[in-house]
Image (cartoon, rainbow, N blue to C red; front, side, top):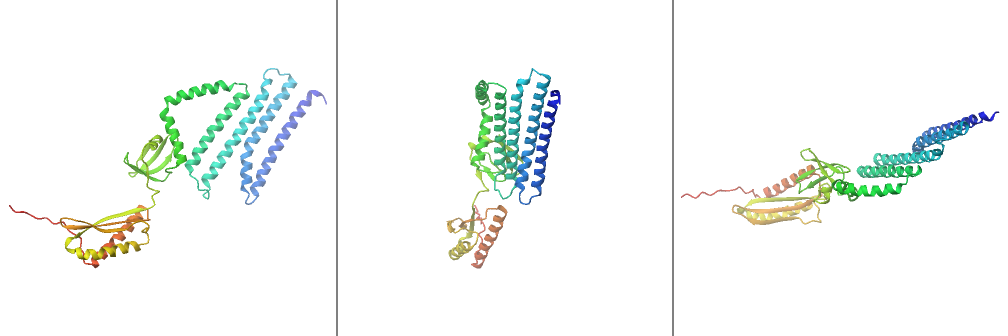
Length: 340
């Protein structure tokens, strides 16, 4: 056979080889999908297929251009084939990293058995995307012979200038990262900001701002930097709720009150959701003009607001039943008139 047609045989052989490898990858994916309890094989194959297939065809295209260049004696542009080949490898490798990153991120967010914060997963994923994109760009520039040292130097100077001009933006960004690391609150938590008089549920912790849905169901957006300088009360993470009540009882029933106080204290101490590790206060506090005041203070392990209010209502009715048993009414304000 004439040597003029030998390059066609090489090109066809390369095409058949690439097509055969692609067909084998497809068969492997089909085989992995039929196996039971081995979904990880299928996922690995699906992650690898697009980058590997694209890389094979890109390398074949470079090989074909090289064959054509030798046969038709192309002169210009042939020196860039090596850089193009390396770029294809770099781009497909970065693509593969992106796909692995997305697969891991989706697994962590979907799998209920892995107790991770979805906001943390998203922020780490964004940082990984930024890092992969930046490194890939610098490596490609260096592959084509661009000296990246001046670029890095200029980038450092530019970053300093941008940092000075956008210090608030950078402060919010860094504060957002610290919120993800320290995690004083997560989406869904009920927080209280006393200095801003804001109470609401965290909806999202973004790159630069945090969104809160307040008690009136209004959307409140605060820069992340605010949380590094102000007091944040995380209501969701409270372990107890305090019962604090003051009973006003008539002065005429003082002897009966002294008998009722121990019974009220004993009843509260026997209540299941009252934490005995904390003091239970039921004491006669003061004498007023028309009544004496009895303070009741205890700590309940119920933190849900609705359930706590129901429990406190039940407890107060039991206190009233003890007072009724001792024939102690609640004091009513009295008014005296002085006639001139």
